[in-house]
Amino acid sequence: MLIHFSIVKKGGLEIYSYDTVTPYDHLVNKKLLSGFLTAIQLYSETMGTTLKQIQFNDFILYFKSYGDFSFRIMVIEKVNPDVFENICNTLSKELFTIISDTVEENLPNKNDIERIIYPILSPFYFNISDESELVEKLKLATISKIALVGLAKAGKTSIKRLFFENWSKKMLKDIKPTTRIDISLKFLDFLNHKISIHDFGGQHTYRKEYLQREEIWQGISSLIFVLDLQNPSAFHLAKKYLSRIWEIVDRVNSNHPRLSIFLHKYDLAIRDKLTENIKDSLHIFDEFTNVATFYLTTVDDTSSNIALIKSLYFSLPEAILKRLLEEELLDYFETIILPKYSGFSYDESFMDNFKTNKPQLLKNAQVHGMSTGFLLQKSWLDALMGDWTPRQRLLSTKSLKVKKKDNSLFITIPNWTDKDIPKELTNTLLDGILAGILKTFQLSEPRRVSETEYSTTWKVQF
Image (tube, rainbow, N blue to C red; front, side, top):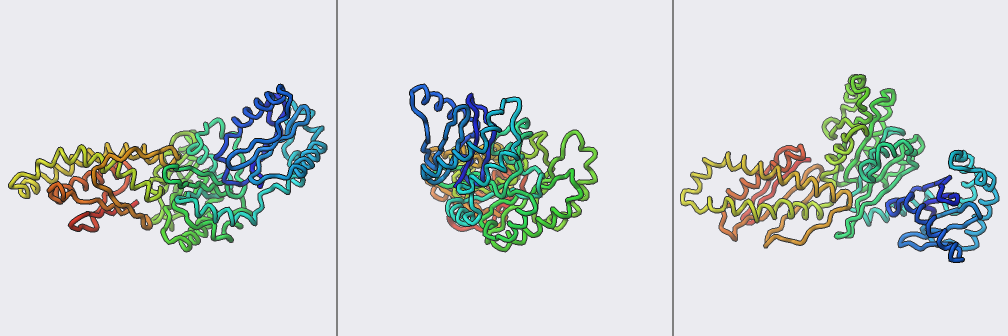
């Protein structure tokens, strides 16, 4: 299966590059790889040898030199040397004139190159019939699946590149339309699990195919629909597309994913001209008012990143949410908050004082909760980006439980009965802390839904 093919002139000038739809684009930064290969290729030549291939963990990179230029091809499976040699020789013969005439200021027409290389490289192409097998593998390997969908040129890939791949706004100018489904993986090494981000190409033929293949909509934890706010003529088509997707997603997923709708390209220079478009889009998408959260976004500022963060807060796997809450909430509560207020519980007139002081206790706890919430946001974001590793457990005995169902999170926290601290006090403090945390996430206050002798469960609506 082909991952990447490129043609490079000596000196590192990449004159053609082609990426296929695979989940492997996270493995390598193509620009860095190009420089690295040029360096080791030149080094191998000075040593009197010719570098032919490099074996990586998940793929093999072959390259073949023809004097002034090289072909570089990444494939998942091992290639028969004779087949590879024949293909490269055929490519060289067909492309020799185009490549030889190339200078940095005068790159060849990519359409001309593609017309030549596609038939020749066909043995290596990603076969769409294999995609169901790929989806099955991803389903087994992935806990959290995030889907970015919308019509063509809505801005989905730009949003993804800015947030998940740290692209600059300048780099977005060279962005290419997404072909089929572009899948990126974020690794959470401590759990040996992955978060996958699926960027669905928005061209008509792809949209039609997606709607016919319900299996690709299974296992989605967060669905983000991107609408081009500057193209009102496409609002009704976009809404029809989302309605079809949502009907399938609702049917094939036992847990309903969170739906976010980005009213995108709310660009700074023309905001005053987009008021009517905003009203029209909200009117056309009114059937989603009760199930979706709407955001105004643009790549001109941080609004698209902020909207993504808010959309994905609770798309993380339960195991990660549990560890994050244990580290940032329970650890802080057990080691800092509880000792501060525990003396209050030994007063003989505890209940009388408690009733009088409960409103103030809640206020104080909310302040603590807000500071905890900002710490959680940072950890939440690091986890989404695959950059978070849990620290060594600091808690003495306590551990909480986390369960997600539809758009709700159920958090069960043990009571501190072993320390003879009244449940009324700990639960009141936790009411306030959880409310403070959720305020930083711009969510409504939690609700106690279950209390036993040993634990209390809060419901968080997101």
